[in-house]
Image (cartoon, rainbow, N blue to C red; front, top):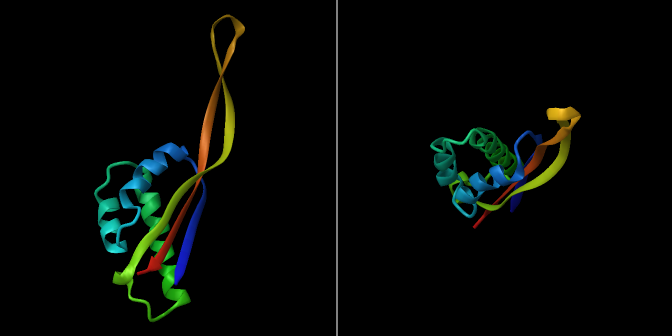
Length: 111
């Protein structure tokens, strides 16, 4: 049995999100929640919300599923759209600023 949750258009680059997702990939759900609670990166709170949503989706699909048997099967940060901004520079030039977004997907499954 699998359940998933997706947070779309999160204003963090996929590389920064994937750094935190690597910490929890393959762990039990309760271990992953502890890891996210003590991770200092700001994206960890958003990832914890997505994980909580995936667990809630698993209990909706199968009401008899034991939460302690769930593990994180897949945790991915895909790239979303990029906002392009311009920063004025000297002598009339301009530099581009790329504000990246990501789609965070977590899939939980039973062993």
